[in-house]
Every structure is written in structure tokens, then in C-alpha cells.
Amino acid sequence: MRARRDLPAWQHGWWGGARHVPSPNVSERPAGTRPSLVVLHSISLPPGRYGGDEVEHLFCNTLDCAAHPFFEQLRGLRVSAHFFVRRDGAVLQFASTARRAWHAGVSHWRGRDNCNDWSVGIELEGLEGLRFEPAQYRALRRLLRAVVSVHPIEEIVGHEHVAPVRKRDPGPGFEWARLKRFSGAVRGVDTRTWPGSMRTG
Image 1: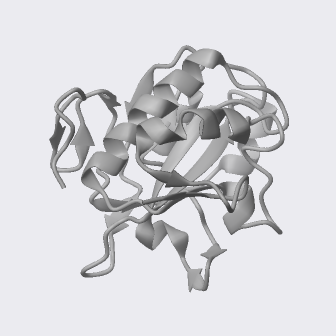
Image 2: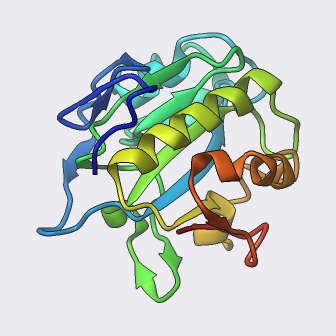
């Protein structure tokens, strides 16, 4: 699929609307697999503190785990996401969408395991259960429009939906109804499975 002309261009899975911070924590998707799922997450480091560079460092394996007591449990962790949306709406990209980012972990959706293989992971700067900023919803709308312009995305879900025993993000503070209100601008959307997912046509 071709990118929309009113959106920044894509090059080799990297979006022109984001600041690029390549993470080493990526791998190849299974042969012939294109992403058809978007998984939304929330993250802040330390939890509830916003605006720092700790998430960048975590995804790039450069986090100083001695800098905060919470970070000790992250020592040796190797994770990433394709995108990170800050509270002010700035978007960072850590992995090409052509490659597999390490965001969902052990996961399952609609009869398929290993959601990392066939999904795009988007982290929102925030704390599960708390609200997100209007600027983040605006940035998410633009980002989703861009992603579905080049990938055959069928559904958008939360980490809590694909790994319900382990994860609860983005949590009740994320307004799925707000996402639904602009979903038509993403692409033709069937919201009959709302809020657990957003199916695109």
C-alpha cells in the first residue's frame, strides 16, 4: 500500500513523522508476515514520572539501573516498541515496522500466539489507570493513519487484551471511546467488538 500524500513519507519501515532512535532489541518477522495488528501500551520510568529519557535508554539497553530503586528490576531486560508517544505528542520510533519489536511478550489474539510476530507496538507515555493527554490522542490519530496507510492493519488492541493475565496497560485511563470517535479518519472501521479491539476495513 502507498502512504497517504498528506502524511510524512515512509522509508524502509521508518516513518518521517517520528524521531528515529534505533533499538538493538529487534528481530526479523517470520517469512511472509506483514503486521495486521496494532498493540497499544503505556510506560513511564520511573512509574508516573514523565518527560525524561529513561524509556529511550531502556529500549536502547543503556538505562542506568543504579539511578533509581525501581530500575533494578529492569536490569538485563531487553525490550523495545516500534513507537513511543510522549505526553506532548512527540513521537519516537525505535524499530522499523518491517521488523519485529519486542513489546508484547507472551501473547495471544484471535487464535494466534506471539503477537510480536504480526503487530506494531505503540507505547504511550503514561501510567496504567491514569488519563492520557489530548496531545497524545492527536498524535496517535496521525500515527495510526500513517501505519494503516502502509500496512494491512485489521485491529487495534491493548496489551491488556493480548496478555490479560500479565498486563493491564494501557488500562482504564485510556479512552477507547475517544479513539472510536476519530476512527473513521484512520480508515473504514467496524467497532462492533469495541472496546477490546478496533477492526479496520
